[in-house]
Length: 478
Image (tube, rainbow, N blue to C red):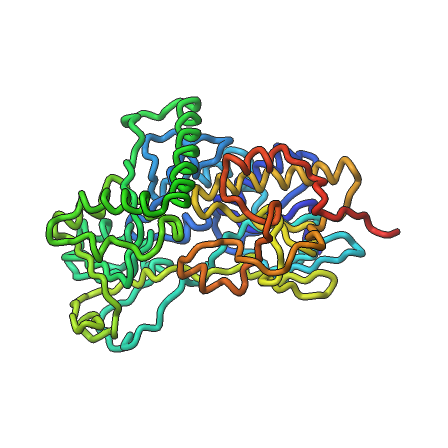
């Protein structure tokens, strides 16, 4: 056996580093290790290297609450975020706890031993009492790539943003970006700075919101108190916008559409190019910092086309209306491939776990699966807001187990709760719908149903009862 620890964290990205900090400060008597499948830390912020990659949430809420974001730029570049994550790991002595190049492939729970045995792709084994998966929710090896007709006919390079080639030269070139989500909205203005022209081809538009890239602090680093104040303000503002969107979708949708329309050039009509067919927050809002996408459209360096692609052709793409768009490079910003539990094969006492049949407890643990949590952030706010709540709850749970000499904690749905229910992430986005069959299911009521509201989740997760009647506690039989 390579190592035996109390807690094994899988993933050394934004969530895993945050989890490690919470474990070593709130559970100092618990040993832990982090297993990272890649050779470097940083997760998403090291993997994605396409032009303009940036946060799609403000850094005051996406940053760690224990290390407030103090830079004036609220929508930060991917490289800046990566340095922040790695510097946090170094500053708090977490880097030395990471084992790189250990991609976890399976985890086996033994009730007899009250322990997990975790195996990696390189043949190592680790044992732990509690398994905490900070693996995110998408496949790192590759994104969702549509098999467009005629792909092999296109004469130029076809690139997916998740696998961006470092040597791709697009200066002066004609670029077609396929997609309308956050990645496409980021790529178009960034590439338009040096490309000959960038055309965003979308099947249907997304809701967009124009936000300032900075927060009015000039170029100076702000005080921790000021940073925390801005964080609190942004938490409340985001929650209010989401709640208003669900309660008055037509009014909020109209406001967002008008905001975009005011920034478009006359030759780009809001309908159909910026008039979504769904309600706000049925899918995530796309943030346009400082209106950079609209600036590129007004300058004529970028354009948008709303139509279905019929086929790729040697010189570009042909749409179903017969229009041909010439391109030297095609970028398929067609989304992520969603996975659960880091694509780890999980077994409980020899029984394989089917994630699509699990009920999710408090948005982090699962019916019938002992001593395991999966860190998943918010769908309607900054990822870290929820991730940090989950990590702090895990610490509370571990301390409760220690005080009461409990070895096994297993979420157990009440007998009157019907099986099934909607998936954990209730969005109409393509990447969520494609993964609906494998996502754990929500129940009809809390704590088996996610609220997606930090303002109500925070007191419940930080101070709510651990023994709430929905969890079975046990010790090994000796």
